[in-house]
Amino acid sequence: MSDTSQNGRSDEFEAGPDDLAERLANVDEELAHQRASALRAGLEDYELDDADLDVLDAATENPDEIHYLPALPVVAIVGRPNVGKSALVNRILGRREAVVEDTPGVTRDRVTYQAEWNGRRFSVVDTGGWEPDARGIDASVAAQAEVAIDLADAVMFVVDSNVGATATDEHVVRLLRKTKKPVFLVANKVDDARQEAQATELWSLGLGEPHPVSALHGRGVADLLDDVLKVLPTESAYAQREVGGPRRVAIVGRPNVGKSSLLNKAAGEERVVVNELAGTTRDPVDEQIELGGRVWRFVDTAGIRRRVHLQQGADFYASLRTSTALEKAEVAVVVLDVTQPISEQDVRIIDLVLESGRALVLAYNKWDLLDDDRRRYLEREIEQDLAHVAWAPRVNISARTGRHLEKLVPALETALESWDTRIPTGKFNAFLAELTAAHPHPVRGGKQPRILFGTQAASRPPTFVLFTTGFLDPGYRRYIQRRLREIYGFEGSPIVLNMRVREKRRK
Image 1 (cartoon, rainbow, N blue to C red):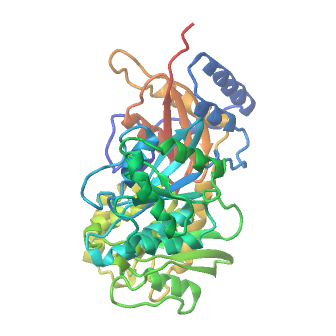
Image 2 (cartoon, rainbow, N blue to C red):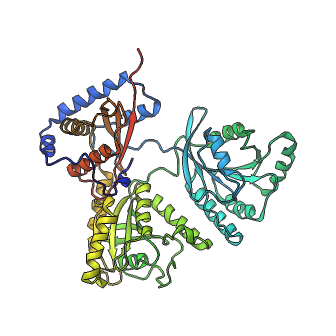
Image 3 (cartoon, rainbow, N blue to C red):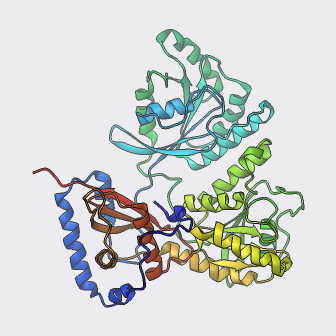
């Protein structure tokens, strides 16, 4: 769980001042390492799975070692509405996860699930975002397919074999022919052998042999997965993290808050069209820009619009591009227009950044237009609506005049440093031991969950795993996150805290 759900709630674990920082400063590092090793050895008495062992193997004492768990290979499932993409996802997962309805376009976002077949784990991306109006459907299906192709290691293109290839399918096929990634043409709704002849007609699409399946009944899906796994890498080529090179910054925010003006002012020239008409920017524009004595790669993204307004293909495409830019960035600058009240849309965009696990800087734009009255209201809005990101660096700027733009660089550097931070395993377990000794988890139902061992499984964002004997209350998890911030900083970075509740092995 990341701290996206904090929302400023007060918890029963609000402890008064204590000397935790002082006690931790006096911990002997060698002794802490020995204790952590003993706790780690104690886990042998518990039921652990392969994923647990992967996490434990990643435990390290080297704070400079940026370690990533292998990125699972990604299979994207694309196709026009109502061809059975979500039904196929459910069949692959072996459980009903994706929403299935007879109404075309139920799936609105790309949703990722973890799947396993013949002992191999991989991610499945169910794509959506379809337009309700027929005119925009070609553009939006193609846009969705384009992003999916961009972000996946292999693509399943699903066609309804009863309907055959449509103009929309042809639209997507043109994109698929250009990609160098493996594409599997899936002829769905082939419920028995008599219907297989219809599937063979799809050879005409030029994507090779169609795979006849019935997502509903499971027919042919095993053979399809066997073929997909033959070409799927063991680790995702797309999800490989780039390390080195200029740090990647996504500028995000709702339309017309000044994202393009900010990029132009940072670049010192007119790189992006700036227009009073909201939502002029359609594509992210990657720019290498020197700022504060170092080079950054900025991505200016099209404004995210409210979903109910996604009637036009171009706006749909823009919001999709924003999500893609976030996935490719390391830190996001969320631009807020201080002359307007903080909106639900602003909060949603911030939550999108948190969900993507990126570092975060809040840029309050048009500061030069602020009067005293509005400033008072603004501070109240920030306190109320943005309490869950009180840890994000804040910069008050004017993108139009360039005022205080130089403050953006230290904020970005701080956020990225936090995002990269790693706490050695010995230190982290010493922190947990001191914390739980001073403020133990309350007894629930006659039982008190204990933390057996903790480790930082990854940085970017800092991701901690706790092995416990029982479920920790959300309030107690938030308390651990808050104390981590107080002791180690983490300014500008979300913290992810995962739990693995494990039982003792039966003798």
